[in-house]
Length: 110
Length: 115
Image 1 (cartoon, chains in turn yellow, brown):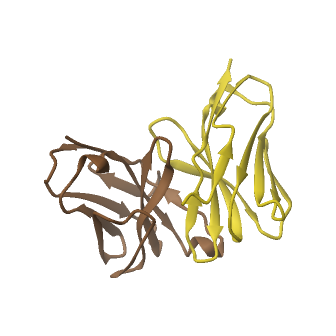
Image 2 (cartoon, helix red, strand yellow):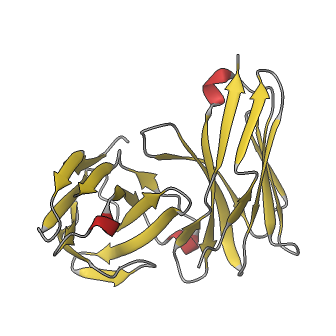
């Protein structure tokens, strides 16, 4: 069964706008991670937020985690055409595996 | 993709034939994983390894076997390929168990088509 559900499935914005992606999960986690995948490539790790953290920043990325709602969000500020990719959340469950969501496809138009 | 290679990168085979995919790492990471990626399903874990000769099943292990005789190599075998195994296969590595917080690093993927 899928641990992570992502919303929206697809997002199209103009360059310079902010992009927000949401992720929900079902069971207790050790941490939650976000990955990016460019077309035809492997996934690349973006950021990790631990279960005892509520917010984390990395450059233009901001991740929040609400363990009471079992949800996380990824905000990309001042988006660029190069941010066009698929974004996946992955929950690190206590048994030691990553469970990935289905991903959000982001298109940033120049 | 640095430090992780997958071979072959593309393969077309026929139903019923055996197929072996190879993942090779130069990072000396302990954990290695095989995933498949399909539209509408995201990434699903097939098998993983937590050391030489130590492997365990993932979410979608039926029809697949793995072997790890050396730290750097993790093989995925489809004993008798079926059309439902047409997919993109990704290998990943991590220094320790994901539940402990380590991130995973992914290879470039292998696109397998079973006719």
